[in-house]
Image 1 (tube, rainbow, N blue to C red):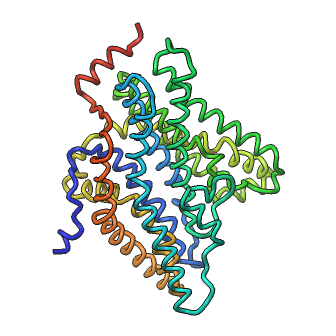
Image 2: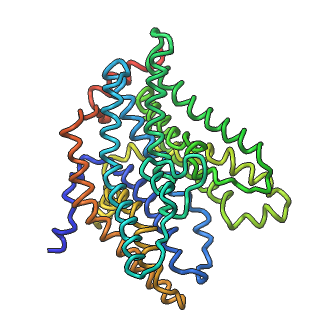
Image 3: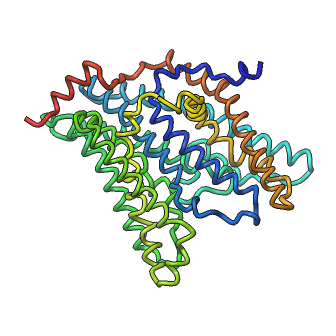
Length: 419
């Protein structure tokens, strides 16, 4: 009975296991960081946590790789970029993200108002004009997100990236010479976003004194429009350089370099090493680095992981034998629901209302938190997210896909080889 209730009835054979692993790791890292809220002052941190990269940045790169591939394949198949392609892209993206988001947002608002009415106290919602911003993803457009539902800062960055990148690609298609190959148009659009956003961060970083800290650039839409573009760059490499993308030796080398860089960058930005920066007098340089080039480096380092993980098509050996593969795919499938539910709806609204009177109580709260996140996210995915997402198949055109090893792949492999 319970197994049927929580079964997602997914087609596991059609998924890329390596990408599921990346998505599962990303959401587990995010939820793990929020779980420590339950420990309060009893949380002392571990050295291992200083080496774990930012799960949200991994989400950005993975999202960019997936939606970048969709844009590029659609553009190449149609041979042009027009309004119908753009609207179809937006319809499919927004059926995937908006219904779940608005459901959780409205539930949070309703619960906060109901609790205030029941207790006879003033509600804790921000002013109405701020709440309205959440419905248009402008809560952190030019400044850091308010305390209410703060985890949505990253979703706002993604949603605006879904708007700006396709619009820029459309503009490039119209403005650049018609004789230019589409691959050049795509590359210029990607580099425009990456270079433009990095220049904006650099200019803004120079306008404020170092004493003002990192300025919250990490969570502001305008300063993070390049966040998914590194993944889009990986999609560009996959589509236009399939020979190199599928080179096993190159993939393994990039994986090793990417892992080393990702862990190193995570450590350079960790709390553990901050004291060293202060004691050696280089803290101002660290602040400047976190305002500017950190996002470029972490984005590119994670992008290096994509060829290997994309080539990991199916789980084998112990991954499949002990049911670990199904668990990873399950978490990957419910990752968006986990993202929306874990911090404000579950941790702050319910779990953290129980006082942490000891380390034991703190760990019990952590266990309850994880259980609630996994169970409620599974139910939300199965009974709302998945059915609503399925509606897009009736309201939009399915975008082209490309499977490694197909005749299409072989033809493109020859087409883009150096002459």
